[in-house]
Length: 53
Image 1 (cartoon, rainbow, N blue to C red):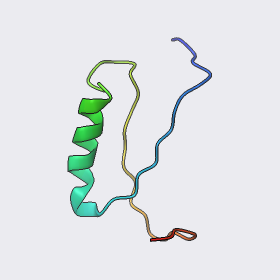
Image 2 (image 1 turned 180 degrees about the vertical axis):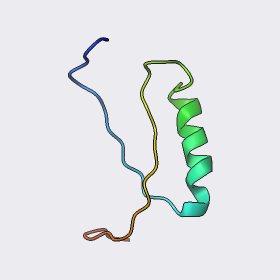
Image 3 (image 1 turned 60 degrees about the vertical axis):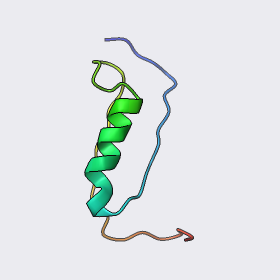
């Protein structure tokens, strides 16, 4: 297992209905079908503060 000290972390907040499409797009564009390229996951948000919209 290689240790990479620097990685990017991108957090996206999307509507629940759009989650699957966003995950599929990220997997395709970041080549996550290839092992070791990264990961993508989703978590339901119950509350959020400090977000301007």
